[in-house]
Image (cartoon, rainbow, N blue to C red):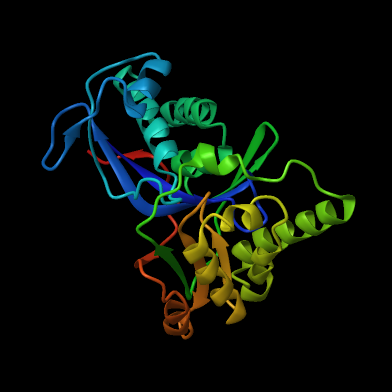
Length: 270
């Protein structure tokens, strides 16, 4: 059996630990070798998640999700290992997906990464509940600048703010609502509120000078842009007509990729 699990971009703007989008960059896993695949190590995250899901077995993988770049690679591994584990144990695809999200969320501790990899689309993590929505980005381009540097999530969390003033909380709440509305409506003006994060972005950018330069240039040019996950990558959304100018604003050394939103989440492919 072979399965496919999407990566994600999370912490969208002010949606720290709360808002994530599944992306069409995938991890593929199988319980049998396949062309181009490597065997997942017994102490790697895929197999750890499989054991936590209650059914350990050899697994083989191939991935196009960049590691340490803010694409949710570890969440995809945790969700994927648990998903294949439960399928091999005889669960239905729907039940395996539910179990995979539970295990992935427990391992990661960040539902805004685990939920997109499990369910696809736009995911909102609110306390112990997660909501799944289908964004409307028709006619828009999602571009991500990916530098050579990597950023380890646990270390990156060590620099975030631990408290906010009441005024900052109000600004953060309003900006998060605007970003979610912008994604659901495909409204670039609302998505421009991505610039209003008060929690993680400013502190993290101090340790990522090239990322900071790209993000600020995109916003100076009027584009909706955010630090993808904990970085170092930067994601942006632009109209098709403005995609070229958006790409030009990402002029620092690195790769530029165009992605689409995955709306299916983890699933069986053969």
